[in-house]
Length: 72
Image 1 (tube, rainbow, N blue to C red):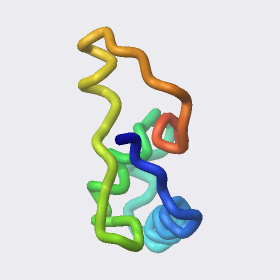
Image 2 (image 1 turned 45 degrees about the vertical axis):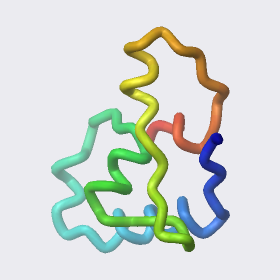
Image 3 (image 1 turned 45 degrees about the horizontal axis):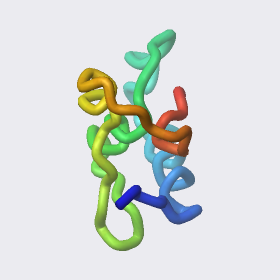
Image 4 (image 1 turned 135 degrees about the vertical axis):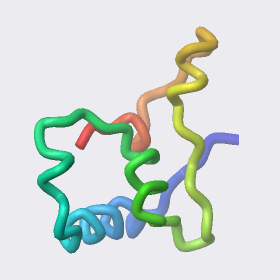
């Protein structure tokens, strides 16, 4: 089953990034959203964090575009 994030999940991640005093260490980088969420401990309202699609892409499986594919 595909993870469907609630609207508050990306908002919580943006808030975590905004409050990070070391945010400039990420400046200029490309990141997978779910991996950043895991770094900050941001979960969805039900406590879940979706799996990163990075491993699936290495396996050759195809995935649909979703919020977890966004680059920040």
